[in-house]
Image (cartoon, rainbow, N blue to C red; front, side, top):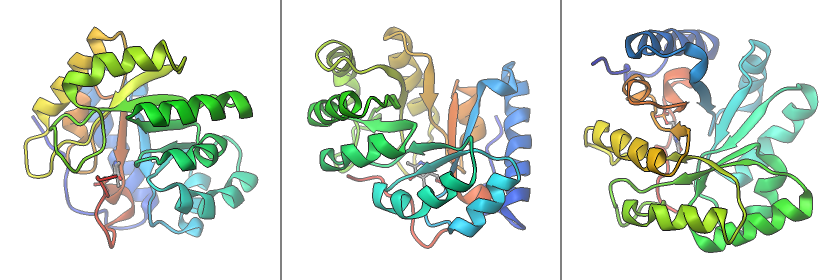
Length: 237
Ligand SMILES: *Cc1c(COP(=O)(O)O)cnc(C)c1O
Protein backbone atom coordinates (compact mmCIF):
# COMPACT_ATOMS: atom_id res chain seq x y z
CA UNK A 1 0.00 0.00 0.00
CA UNK A 2 1.30 3.42 -0.93
CA UNK A 3 0.98 6.38 1.35
CA UNK A 4 0.79 9.94 0.18
CA UNK A 5 3.82 12.10 0.65
CA UNK A 6 3.71 14.02 3.85
CA UNK A 7 6.08 16.62 2.54
CA UNK A 8 4.47 19.96 1.82
CA UNK A 9 3.81 21.00 -1.72
CA UNK A 10 6.65 22.59 -3.55
CA UNK A 11 5.86 25.05 -6.27
CA UNK A 12 2.48 26.66 -6.77
CA UNK A 13 -0.87 25.51 -5.37
CA UNK A 14 -1.89 24.78 -8.97
CA UNK A 15 1.00 22.31 -9.33
CA UNK A 16 0.16 20.89 -5.90
CA UNK A 17 -3.40 20.29 -7.09
CA UNK A 18 -2.16 18.55 -10.21
CA UNK A 19 0.11 16.27 -8.21
CA UNK A 20 -2.58 15.38 -5.66
CA UNK A 21 -5.03 14.63 -8.49
CA UNK A 22 -2.47 12.33 -10.10
CA UNK A 23 -1.92 10.44 -6.86
CA UNK A 24 -5.68 10.21 -6.34
CA UNK A 25 -6.10 8.77 -9.83
CA UNK A 26 -3.36 6.21 -9.18
CA UNK A 27 -4.98 5.21 -5.86
CA UNK A 28 -8.35 4.84 -7.62
CA UNK A 29 -6.72 2.65 -10.27
CA UNK A 30 -5.16 0.43 -7.59
CA UNK A 31 -8.53 0.12 -5.85
CA UNK A 32 -10.45 -0.48 -9.06
CA UNK A 33 -12.49 2.68 -8.56
CA UNK A 34 -13.47 5.40 -10.99
CA UNK A 35 -11.59 8.67 -10.42
CA UNK A 36 -14.90 10.58 -10.42
CA UNK A 37 -15.96 8.62 -7.34
CA UNK A 38 -13.65 10.67 -5.12
CA UNK A 39 -14.02 14.41 -4.49
CA UNK A 40 -10.95 16.43 -3.58
CA UNK A 41 -11.87 18.95 -0.90
CA UNK A 42 -9.00 21.45 -0.85
CA UNK A 43 -8.54 22.32 2.84
CA UNK A 44 -7.93 26.03 2.61
CA UNK A 45 -7.65 27.23 6.20
CA UNK A 46 -5.07 30.04 6.55
CA UNK A 47 -4.83 30.31 2.74
CA UNK A 48 -5.27 33.89 1.57
CA UNK A 49 -8.13 34.88 -0.76
CA UNK A 50 -5.80 35.91 -3.60
CA UNK A 51 -4.25 32.43 -3.61
CA UNK A 52 -7.72 30.88 -3.59
CA UNK A 53 -8.74 33.10 -6.51
CA UNK A 54 -5.86 31.55 -8.46
CA UNK A 55 -6.80 27.95 -7.71
CA UNK A 56 -10.46 28.68 -8.50
CA UNK A 57 -9.38 30.21 -11.80
CA UNK A 58 -7.23 27.14 -12.42
CA UNK A 59 -10.48 25.16 -12.22
CA UNK A 60 -10.59 23.77 -8.70
CA UNK A 61 -14.03 24.46 -7.21
CA UNK A 62 -14.34 22.47 -3.96
CA UNK A 63 -12.89 23.92 -0.74
CA UNK A 64 -13.03 23.05 2.94
CA UNK A 65 -12.67 25.54 5.78
CA UNK A 66 -12.50 24.58 9.41
CA UNK A 67 -13.69 27.78 11.03
CA UNK A 68 -16.96 29.55 10.29
CA UNK A 69 -15.52 32.96 11.11
CA UNK A 70 -12.51 32.58 8.83
CA UNK A 71 -14.71 31.33 6.00
CA UNK A 72 -17.05 34.28 6.42
CA UNK A 73 -14.12 36.67 6.21
CA UNK A 74 -12.60 35.03 3.13
CA UNK A 75 -15.26 33.56 0.88
CA UNK A 76 -18.18 35.94 0.23
CA UNK A 77 -16.07 38.11 -2.07
CA UNK A 78 -14.78 35.09 -3.97
CA UNK A 79 -18.28 33.60 -4.25
CA UNK A 80 -19.45 36.83 -5.84
CA UNK A 81 -16.61 36.74 -8.33
CA UNK A 82 -16.74 33.07 -9.28
CA UNK A 83 -19.68 30.78 -9.83
CA UNK A 84 -19.74 27.07 -9.15
CA UNK A 85 -17.64 27.05 -5.98
CA UNK A 86 -18.68 24.47 -3.39
CA UNK A 87 -17.81 25.24 0.23
CA UNK A 88 -17.45 22.54 2.88
CA UNK A 89 -17.22 23.06 6.64
CA UNK A 90 -14.75 20.44 7.84
CA UNK A 91 -14.03 21.78 11.34
CA UNK A 92 -16.11 21.68 14.51
CA UNK A 93 -19.36 23.67 14.58
CA UNK A 94 -20.87 25.37 17.61
CA UNK A 95 -24.65 25.51 17.73
CA UNK A 96 -24.61 29.30 17.97
CA UNK A 97 -22.87 29.45 14.58
CA UNK A 98 -25.42 27.17 12.88
CA UNK A 99 -27.17 30.11 11.24
CA UNK A 100 -24.02 31.36 9.55
CA UNK A 101 -22.89 27.85 8.66
CA UNK A 102 -26.17 26.99 6.94
CA UNK A 103 -26.08 30.29 5.06
CA UNK A 104 -22.51 29.84 3.78
CA UNK A 105 -21.69 26.15 3.39
CA UNK A 106 -22.92 23.59 0.87
CA UNK A 107 -21.69 20.65 2.92
CA UNK A 108 -21.08 20.28 6.69
CA UNK A 109 -18.81 17.40 7.76
CA UNK A 110 -18.93 17.83 11.53
CA UNK A 111 -22.43 17.05 12.82
CA UNK A 112 -21.85 15.33 16.15
CA UNK A 113 -24.40 16.11 18.84
CA UNK A 114 -28.14 16.49 19.39
CA UNK A 115 -28.05 20.21 20.25
CA UNK A 116 -26.29 20.92 16.95
CA UNK A 117 -28.88 18.83 15.10
CA UNK A 118 -31.65 20.89 16.66
CA UNK A 119 -29.93 24.14 15.66
CA UNK A 120 -29.22 22.94 12.12
CA UNK A 121 -32.76 21.64 11.57
CA UNK A 122 -34.17 24.98 12.66
CA UNK A 123 -31.84 27.00 10.44
CA UNK A 124 -32.31 24.78 7.39
CA UNK A 125 -36.07 25.20 7.64
CA UNK A 126 -35.84 28.94 8.32
CA UNK A 127 -33.44 29.65 5.47
CA UNK A 128 -34.80 26.94 3.18
CA UNK A 129 -31.22 25.91 2.55
CA UNK A 130 -30.23 22.30 2.95
CA UNK A 131 -26.49 21.72 3.12
CA UNK A 132 -25.52 18.07 2.76
CA UNK A 133 -24.55 16.69 6.17
CA UNK A 134 -21.89 14.27 7.35
CA UNK A 135 -21.78 12.92 10.89
CA UNK A 136 -18.32 13.02 12.43
CA UNK A 137 -17.31 9.85 14.26
CA UNK A 138 -14.57 9.89 16.88
CA UNK A 139 -13.20 6.56 15.69
CA UNK A 140 -10.32 6.62 18.17
CA UNK A 141 -12.64 7.49 21.11
CA UNK A 142 -10.25 10.31 22.00
CA UNK A 143 -11.56 12.37 24.94
CA UNK A 144 -10.53 15.73 23.49
CA UNK A 145 -11.81 15.09 19.98
CA UNK A 146 -15.12 16.04 18.41
CA UNK A 147 -17.38 13.39 16.95
CA UNK A 148 -19.82 10.79 18.21
CA UNK A 149 -18.35 7.64 19.72
CA UNK A 150 -18.43 4.61 17.43
CA UNK A 151 -20.81 2.73 19.73
CA UNK A 152 -23.19 5.70 19.77
CA UNK A 153 -23.16 6.28 16.02
CA UNK A 154 -26.13 4.09 15.07
CA UNK A 155 -28.45 5.68 17.63
CA UNK A 156 -27.24 9.18 16.74
CA UNK A 157 -27.87 8.59 13.03
CA UNK A 158 -31.32 7.27 13.84
CA UNK A 159 -32.06 10.46 15.81
CA UNK A 160 -30.72 12.67 12.99
CA UNK A 161 -33.08 11.04 10.53
CA UNK A 162 -36.08 10.50 12.77
CA UNK A 163 -36.36 13.17 15.42
CA UNK A 164 -34.43 15.93 13.64
CA UNK A 165 -35.42 15.08 10.05
CA UNK A 166 -31.91 15.82 8.82
CA UNK A 167 -30.69 14.26 5.62
CA UNK A 168 -27.33 12.78 6.56
CA UNK A 169 -25.38 11.64 3.49
CA UNK A 170 -22.20 10.23 5.02
CA UNK A 171 -19.65 9.94 7.80
CA UNK A 172 -16.40 11.74 8.54
CA UNK A 173 -13.41 10.89 10.74
CA UNK A 174 -10.02 12.27 11.75
CA UNK A 175 -7.88 9.33 12.91
CA UNK A 176 -5.68 9.83 15.99
CA UNK A 177 -2.31 11.39 15.34
CA UNK A 178 0.56 8.91 15.45
CA UNK A 179 -1.51 5.79 14.78
CA UNK A 180 -1.94 3.92 11.50
CA UNK A 181 -5.16 5.39 10.07
CA UNK A 182 -6.33 2.24 8.27
CA UNK A 183 -8.28 0.64 11.16
CA UNK A 184 -10.11 3.95 11.55
CA UNK A 185 -10.95 4.10 7.84
CA UNK A 186 -12.23 0.53 8.03
CA UNK A 187 -14.32 1.23 11.12
CA UNK A 188 -15.88 4.33 9.53
CA UNK A 189 -16.73 2.36 6.39
CA UNK A 190 -18.38 -0.39 8.46
CA UNK A 191 -20.54 2.08 10.39
CA UNK A 192 -21.56 3.76 7.12
CA UNK A 193 -22.37 0.46 5.46
CA UNK A 194 -24.64 -0.81 8.23
CA UNK A 195 -26.46 2.53 8.29
CA UNK A 196 -26.95 2.70 4.54
CA UNK A 197 -24.67 5.70 4.03
CA UNK A 198 -22.70 5.98 0.80
CA UNK A 199 -20.29 8.83 1.45
CA UNK A 200 -17.07 8.74 3.49
CA UNK A 201 -15.04 11.86 4.29
CA UNK A 202 -11.63 10.57 5.31
CA UNK A 203 -8.00 11.07 4.35
CA UNK A 204 -5.71 14.11 4.67
CA UNK A 205 -2.33 15.03 3.18
CA UNK A 206 -0.51 12.17 4.89
CA UNK A 207 -2.96 9.38 4.12
CA UNK A 208 -5.42 10.27 1.36
CA UNK A 209 -4.25 7.56 -1.03
CA UNK A 210 -4.75 4.92 1.66
CA UNK A 211 -8.16 6.45 2.50
CA UNK A 212 -9.17 6.09 -1.16
CA UNK A 213 -8.12 2.45 -1.11
CA UNK A 214 -10.41 2.07 1.93
CA UNK A 215 -13.42 3.67 0.24
CA UNK A 216 -13.14 7.42 0.83
CA UNK A 217 -15.47 9.47 -1.37
CA UNK A 218 -14.18 12.81 -0.03
CA UNK A 219 -10.55 13.47 0.85
CA UNK A 220 -9.66 16.69 2.68
CA UNK A 221 -6.20 17.75 1.61
CA UNK A 222 -4.47 20.97 2.66
CA UNK A 223 -0.71 21.08 3.06
CA UNK A 224 0.01 18.77 0.10
CA UNK A 225 -1.63 21.44 -2.06
CA UNK A 226 -0.92 24.74 -0.36
CA UNK A 227 2.27 23.96 1.59
CA UNK A 228 2.81 23.79 5.33
CA UNK A 229 0.66 25.93 7.60
CA UNK A 230 1.62 27.90 10.66
CA UNK A 231 -0.81 25.85 12.77
CA UNK A 232 -1.80 22.17 12.64
CA UNK A 233 -5.33 21.01 11.93
CA UNK A 234 -7.45 21.76 14.95
CA UNK A 235 -9.13 18.56 15.99
CA UNK A 236 -10.74 19.50 19.25
CA UNK A 237 -13.97 21.36 19.71
C1 LIG B 1 -6.66 21.08 7.98
C2 LIG B 1 -7.58 19.93 7.89
C3 LIG B 1 -7.40 18.95 6.92
C4 LIG B 1 -6.23 18.92 5.96
O1 LIG B 1 -5.05 18.68 6.65
P1 LIG B 1 -3.66 18.51 5.85
O2 LIG B 1 -2.86 17.62 6.71
O3 LIG B 1 -3.10 19.85 5.67
O4 LIG B 1 -3.99 17.88 4.53
C5 LIG B 1 -8.33 17.92 6.88
N1 LIG B 1 -9.38 17.86 7.73
C6 LIG B 1 -9.59 18.79 8.67
C7 LIG B 1 -10.75 18.66 9.58
C8 LIG B 1 -8.70 19.86 8.79
O5 LIG B 1 -8.90 20.80 9.73
